[in-house]
Image 1 (cartoon, rainbow, N blue to C red):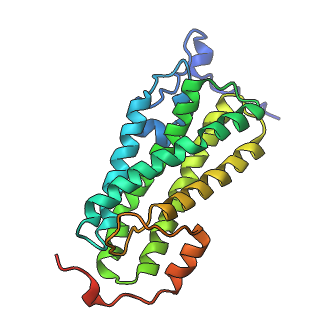
Image 2: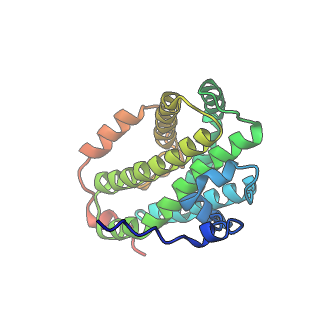
Length: 241
């Protein structure tokens, strides 16, 4: 019985001093967000500044806001982008204290700068994904006159985008030592609820109105129910270009 031939030694085995080259993390911001979110909070990584994350968030919100405002056109083309950018930052600011407390309870070694980086990463990745969906949203905004349908489409794209943004936050906190994922799940639910109610408070988004902000106080569940049950607007009610 012939013995099995010895395995062919690898270059590293023949020369112990030769090791495989380490994986180089992406140095551009979008690459970090999409491929290596842990690099955002890695002290030894290339580093990323909070202004860059906020800049990407604001740019994405302004561009996607134009797509949302294109449904009604007119003044909504500049009102909606400002609402979206301001609402995103305000929702993040409101949820910052709870993110810190729950992350520390989960075991994360979280410092103020890292806290802001994690939050900025969540918001910027969310807006980056929304930007990738902007052409799809624009097609339906231009071809449909149903406020309920277009509004549902925007919320669906938002929920898909924010779910990936929250996954980035969970990855970063795990890299910082968070060992209890349930606490971040709780915060994720709080953040989504705040964004839903914030959007309701800053309405209207799609329909034309003489008021920049609606005065009536209502929960997002009640507002959704009213929007879905509303009949499709007639094409003649859409403003002409």
